Image (tube, rainbow, N blue to C red):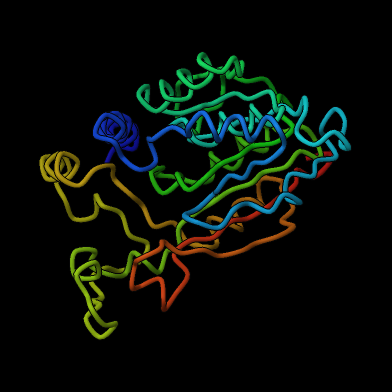
Length: 274
């Protein structure tokens, strides 16, 4: 199915999700921003585990000893008023880039009401042509590339816009989750009720006509793609990034999360000369 059409449909789907109050579209409160300004802050790439502060250590930043102050951060496919305002309040110079105008509007509102100076730019994560090479010191990319049909251009664009030595913090889904029928898994009371329903790699478009995909989007939200660990981690390596750390996480309250990690977060650095 045409990848450009899928991206356009997912953009519209995320506009609807944001308007409907998706949990990832609820901006942080005034108290969170005030605390970040005083040095007390944390953000997530996945569901629950805060990103370690050490992951933000950045030799490409203007002053590595000054924390986030002056660090040029790209919040990639990270709209919703959650991470960008916190990082900006902590001292970073933040650009929020997202396909959804509604998600960006939440960052813009928090920025305006707290004078955070967040720049918002609309576009797709696989095309960062709005930015010059080596424009950023750090890219913060929470779980969102599950909505991208292809991963390779995403990693290569991130590597292009990072300075040599710049840091990528990325969250992504465990592809094994996509083996299971979601409705059955969410209703399960024991792991014996999990039903393997899909072959990997999986896409919500698999075996569906365009009309069926449109019906799915209207009912179930944005189209997702499983993407392999080779595509996630190997893709970063092939783009010229060096992996330095990794951890896993799960969604609180999901039974399946008691038996396998639901997502991962990685830290990588752009290699000099790449």
